[in-house]
Image (cartoon, rainbow over all chains, first blue to last red; front, side, top):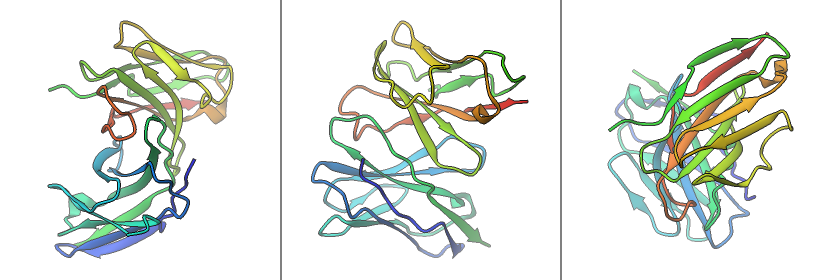
Length: 110
Length: 116
C-alpha cells in the first residue's frame, strides 16, 4: 500500500489561508488522493479528493503536483472550526482500503 | 437525512468478557467499513463489507475479532475475551455503490471501548 507523509502539526491564524502538505512519492498511476479531517471527539469527515487535476469544492482546494508525488490541501480562510487532524490518504482504483497515517493536527489561532 | 449511527457510544468491560458493537449505515449504502483508532493514533482498517459479504478480513487483529452484516444493512463487530490492548475507539463508515476508491466514506461517531 502506498504511504503518505505529513507534518505532525501546523498552526494558522484565523481568516488566513492554510496550506497542508502531503508527500506520496510511491503513488501509482491509479491511486486517488483523498483528504479527510477529524474534529475532536468525532469520526472523520470527507474534505476533498482528486486523481491528477486540481480540485475545488466548497470546503477546500486540492493542488496536485505535476508528477503526483505530492499534494497540498488549501483552506482559503481558516476558521476556529477548522481546527482538526487532517489526513491525506491514497486509495488504489478498485480497492476499498484506506490507509490512514497519523495526519496533521491543525491549530487555528484567534 | 440520518447519518451513520453506532451503539453504544461508550462501553466499559472487564478483561475476558465479550462485547458487541453495532453500526447502522446510511440507508442504501452497500459498502460498510470498520476501523479502530487507538489513543493519539490514526485509523486502522479492520474489515470491509460489500452487501453482506466481507471480501477481506485481513485487517482483523486476531481471531477474537469477528464481524457480520445482515440484510445489507446493520453490522456487528464482536470482540471475544477482550484484552486491555483492545481499548480504542471503534469507528464505522459507509459509502454508496460504485468505485470504492473514490466514493466518499461517511463515518459514525464511534464507540469508545475501555477494557479494565
